[in-house]
Image 1 (cartoon, rainbow, N blue to C red):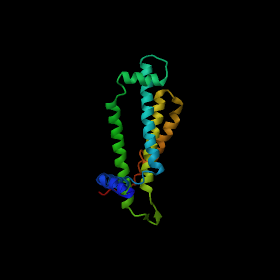
Image 2: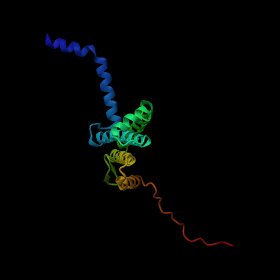
Image 3: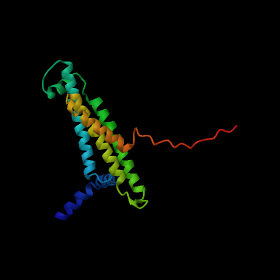
Image 4: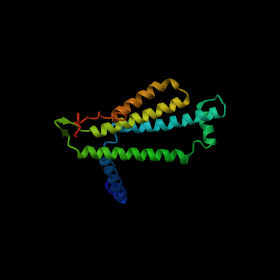
Length: 188
């Protein structure tokens, strides 16, 4: 009797369970291991970045109103002044989340496409590790910039260091040396 009731419960919503398992299978293939430390850490940094952004806007609002109160009062005033609202914050977060997901999917698929060994060196997992690390550095830099906007100016060297690390990873600002073809002889 108990087994038939369980089987009937499973059979009642089988299509929803199949759809959910198909979606999870596709997401795991496209994004990779969503329980991995770098993935969870990256999205935690995105949330912390959003919170520090609100705090920076709150601190600026307190300065605009010439008030010396807590940051929570500043956030409350920013909401009242419509500096923090659902439309602008959700739009920014949605754009960032979509861009990050596209990058994560692209680099995860790249990891599946390229061979695990290139010129005798193992590069298994390198694309995923690179993009997760680069996005984490970008988020950390944004968090530090938000904290500097709040008035923590002593973090300026940390922000500059993160910027250098990000640029070093991508090679930004570093042009390869131009190879001269050598001396040329003028022909008459």
